[in-house]
Image (cartoon, rainbow, N blue to C red; front, side, top):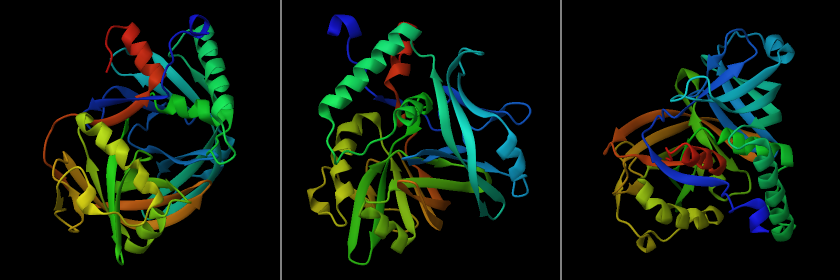
Length: 308
C-alpha cells in the first residue's frame, strides 16, 4: 500500500516563523483588483467551514452577494505561484464599530501543492485512514470543507497558549483558530462544547502566549486542558509569571504575550466566536514562533529544496 500512496503526509506540520509570517500572501478575488487579506481573514467555524473578512462599515452587502469570490494562497518568494484556491459564498455580516465582519462559506477548493495524480492518491489514502479510524463521537467535517481547511493552512497559522481565569477557575490551553482583522480587532474561535468557553465569556479577557517551536511538545500536551475548566498550575512543566496588563499566569518562556478584551461573542456553526481588541502586547524575544502549515505545502517546499 505504501508503494502506491507513498509515505504518509501529515495534515499539518509545526514550524518556527516570525510573526507576522512572510511566506504566503492571501488574496481576495472578485471585487475588482485582488486585495491582500493575509492579516484580515480568519476561520471562525469548522462545521461548516466559515471565514470572516473585515470590510469598511458601509460596504454594500449586495456586492458580496453577487460577486464570484475566491481566496488564493500565493507564494511571496515565487511571485505568480498560486499554491491553492478557495471559492467563497457570502452568508451574512456582523456589525462592529469601524468594521463590517463578513462571513463566507467555502464551496470549492483547488490545491496545487502536489501534481494532480499525487494529490488524488493522497486524498484516497486520507479517506481510507479516516474510515478506518472514525468513531461516532469524532468531530467530523465534510470532505469539501476538510480539503478547504488543508488549503487555508498553506498560509502559516500562529499557535498560542491561551490563559483565562474566571471565578475560581483558570486554565491554559493551545489555540490556532485565531488572527487579526481590520480596524484593530482580533478573532478567536473555539468549539462551543469546550468548557473554556464559559470562562472566556465570563472573564472577557485572555492572555495569548506565543511560544518557540522547541516548546511544541509541551504546547501539544496542554491540549488535554480543553476538556477542563480548572487545572493544577503546579503540575505544569514550566514556570509562570503574571502578564503585564491583566496579571494572568503565562509561561516565563513565552516569546510574546498579547492580552485581549472581549467585545462580542457569537455562536457561529460549531464554534464560539470571540471578537476581541488588543489591550496590551509585550514582545520578550524575537525568536521564531510556533506556526502550523499544511503538510502538503511542506512536501512541496521540500521538493523545492527550501523546507520550513
